[in-house]
Length: 110
Length: 122
Image (tube, rainbow over all chains, first blue to last red; front, side, top):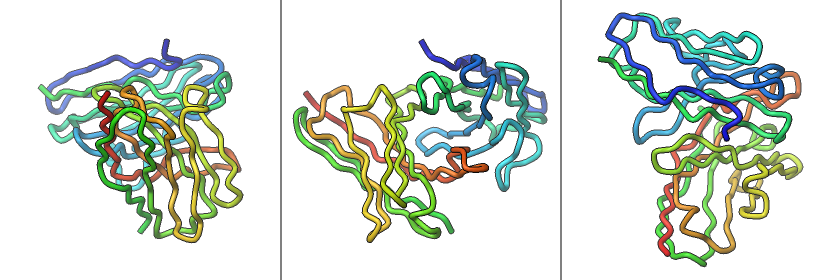
């Protein structure tokens, strides 16, 4: 059973806002910073958001992260076709003394 | 420019040993942890372990401890991931990534290698 969970997929039409939730617990999201990674098919992941809500260099402000309690979320506003990718949340977990990733969420632009 | 360049794809048989590499450039190699992450076909990311080239301190995920070995060669600024005896279940894509700190705590994987695909046949 994964310590951090995300939905397998979300979809929306161009221009809409989509939100990806990441649910954890008191041993991970509740006490540590959350990161988000973007991964296009056949390529390596890329850091998108770190420390819950800090955008990595060059990331458009359409992408935003937030955290509340033991949950975090990634929001993409003004959705574009080029945003189609997998998005992974990640956080340190004290119970396993290591990073744990959500299973990844595939964003589809309809 | 910070870069991590990984070795090429591998096709191996079960029981064979393997070492894949991750060549770092563009920064002080001994000042940043390096992480290894596995992604099995069609699945999510799994953290395997990290190493600090400055003193070779290594930490493994409980899921991978005893299954793999992580090492570095500071003279060539290269990190390695090694198996003594591969299993078919080791097939997957393996990424190295540089770890940035925040106030001394492991913070984020800020730069990733391009990945090394490992295909193990039984």
